Amino acid sequence: MRAPHYLLDTNILSEPLRPVPNSGVMESLIRFSGLTATATVVFHEMLYGCYRLPNSRKRQGIEAYLREEVEAKLILLPYDHEAAKWHASERARLVKLGKTPSYVDGQIAAIAVVNNLILVTNNQADYVDFQGIELENWFTNS
Image (cartoon, rainbow, N blue to C red):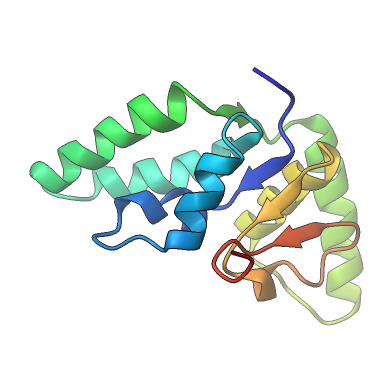
């Protein structure tokens, strides 16, 4: 597996599960296959959402997707020591400016920045205040 270039946010990684997925996202997932990773924090968000569902075909489909497509094919990057240091520094900077970004978004941003990855998200507004982060939106960049 090649080194990743992109870190996929939850709204990108969950797009294939939609009844009618966005064609730009799907094309980019195929085009950049092998160059994508996700954060363990994102994996947690998806798995938590899945576990909250009653036992059903939908839940079984999500579990299969997470097992066969996410765990088996993507690098899952942890929120490690370097990410924690970057996150703490950036969080302190933003609080001084009167901004309070989501803790989880800060973790995801930190993982992207310390691994020199482009964060792919449809929620760019959640990340725009973080310094040093590079963003792409495959919903609009298709």
